[in-house]
Image (cartoon, rainbow, N blue to C red; front, top):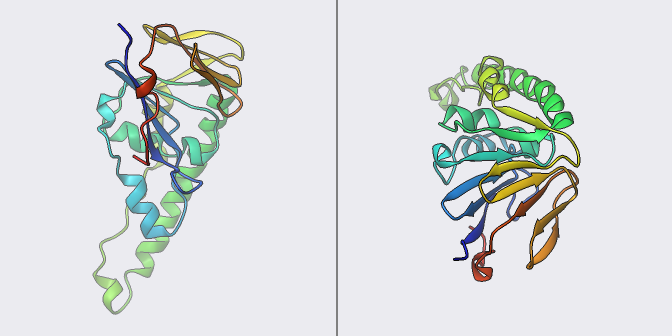
Length: 202
């Protein structure tokens, strides 16, 4: 019997940062990218600290590439309960190790600066000290979840779905969809065509 496939656009909808695409295939679910939303400080704080799904329910994360708007919120996902593997090419893994560490350091400094600004006179002085989204100490568990794969190397995501480090996402019989420039997913079982993409922004 065909299994349902659905895609929910959890970030970067009607904007260009904070890429998150949740894929559900039968009883399995995984996230394509978990990027930082980059914008006004208060808005970014709200968007980046919350998910419209329970991170603990995800089976895996797959990264398209290392840019922070695609990978930069992984430590938050892990801190909120995600315990699965994070799949990426070896190059993406190496870049994330450096870029996430730099991001965490900048967040600490920005939080310190914002807290100093809020400690002055007037209404702002009643604001609580701002906490960084994550710190360098939070990165160890996140990086420990990375699983590196080579280009053109097929590997299993879970039963019925595998990936290849190629530029085309392959959904047999239905269509070929360009997906960034690093990863392709191949689903080896029949699909319900009508459940592939839900209308509207979700």
